[in-house]
Length: 285
Image (cartoon, rainbow, N blue to C red; front, side):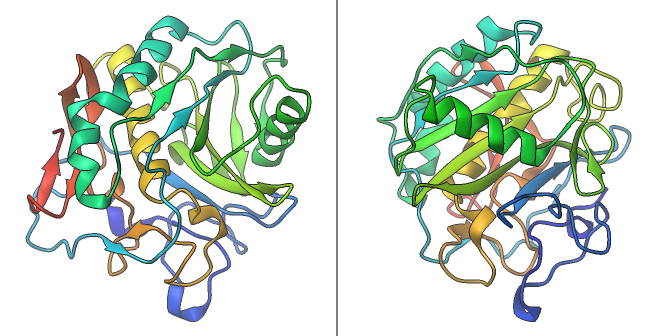
């Protein structure tokens, strides 16, 4: 699936419209109660070259004036106790804010003084859900004090157990997408969240990375983490302007999309490479 054929943002003005392969007539976010949008990480063909093997056609990222998470504060959520790789995921998030990957993001005015805490283990049933239910559950956890209230730096990545299908419009986890990040507003504050299915289940296993399940999970998580850092309010954007952050307008891509499926290593973990304007290439440091 080439990077030019999937949908980044829904219900945009004509100046901000994009083509798609994972959409229906209304786009991939028709079920969100408050009209927010998401940004999908598409599956890739493991037998085809990774996206952006040549960089000369990439315009690079432009800053559109929206918020960025200059000092990220990561609060993972495990959907229930059956969610796999919890220890690895906690260690991964703890390492990333001070990693070489994050040091590279200084060119986008991102610092390495962020932090992460161990994820909370929620008690939800293992059953297929829609994105609107994830937003609703995060709202309940925040209002109930199980998660801290959102700030300008907070990111809530939600990880899921096997046996679940997450649906966003007509787009389904491990069918059209590996993961996504989005935005909704709670009490006047942006809630920046990510959704990472079980990467070991059918469809995602092999379609979301060419390594083992642990490494592919970390790689997918890093894709969403870095995009949520550099373009957290993409879920609220309707034009090429704020609240959009760093974005590649000609290709309708975020920092990770330009390098989708290209893996590297940072702080001892497998990560997806991210686009560097400075290097004019996909890098991991």
